[in-house]
Image (cartoon, rainbow, N blue to C red; front, side):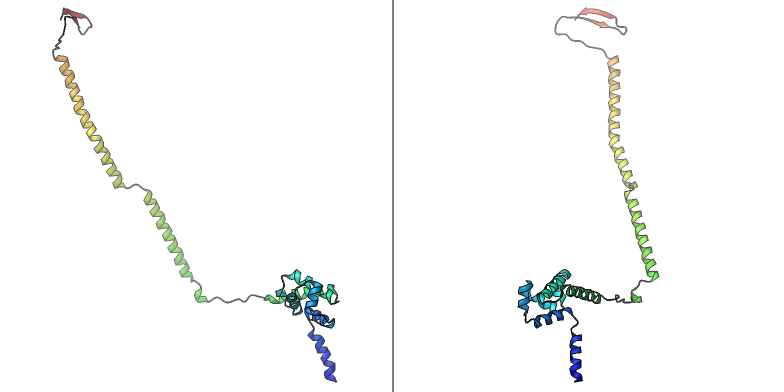
Length: 209
């Protein structure tokens, strides 16, 4: 007798999810999932997921609440109460699925770089940067040997011109000297009058040639 009194209480305690309430109401009304699907125009797969409280099978939170309210209307359950219960279950599931804290894995001290290694890397980096800066500075400076070679080439190109200019000037001077002291010979192909101007511009020695 005592067992018979406890059994209903255990059955009532077992019905803790909204999906179980909907399923029991459907069975009490003598309806199948196909009948509820026809009344609500919801697929049997989604209705079965609601009965199992497996809400991950449904498209989203809004669809879960809407489908559950439609299911409640089809089996004469208070849809507002069912909708509120579904939202509460969704909140509990979402909260329970998140860990209260993230597991923290302590770092192995052997993997951490020591202070000496850190300073060594810093010094090496600074030395490399300094060496690169010096190389860049020297690479843009002109090479002294190259400058000297260019100067020698410029001097060599100018020397022949000076040498050629000097003999030309000497030759012109000698020709001028010769022209000043040498006699002038005139030859005519017919009889002409000819006269000569002296240094003062006076014409003298008019004669027939």
